[in-house]
Image (cartoon, rainbow, N blue to C red; front, side):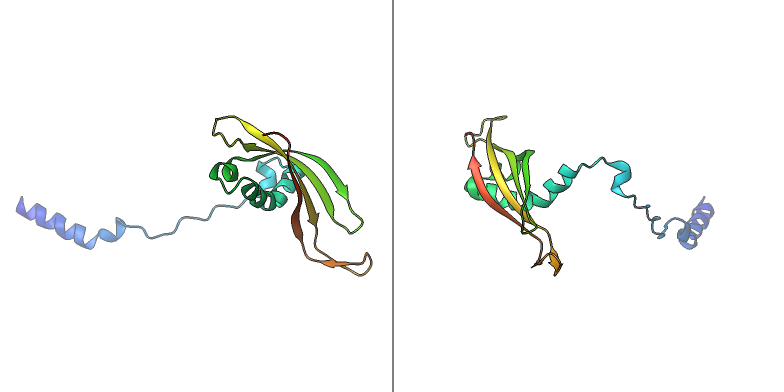
Length: 141
């Protein structure tokens, strides 16, 4: 029995390279999102303006944690093209009420200006991309 134990120990000692594999996993193919997701133009616009609105919601509601994490974009109410090659958008949003009751939201209207990057002497503009909140109204509390 001792001989078998010694032989097995020697075999395991010299044959451990088969027990551990340091081979990295094969990289997965990256698929474009368009194949897997349905994205509307409204989704794209909301992704672009989200950071500016998020900062303003936190400012309007005094930096309360619930307002920063819980607000939701409802719908784009209006889009106006300006002669300075910018777009003014009015968006309805829902913000959690201050009384911390679940499922109670205040409705607000936010007006945002999106100025796309432009550097063209033909149309007379030269500015970088910018998103700014023009107006913030509390519709309901």
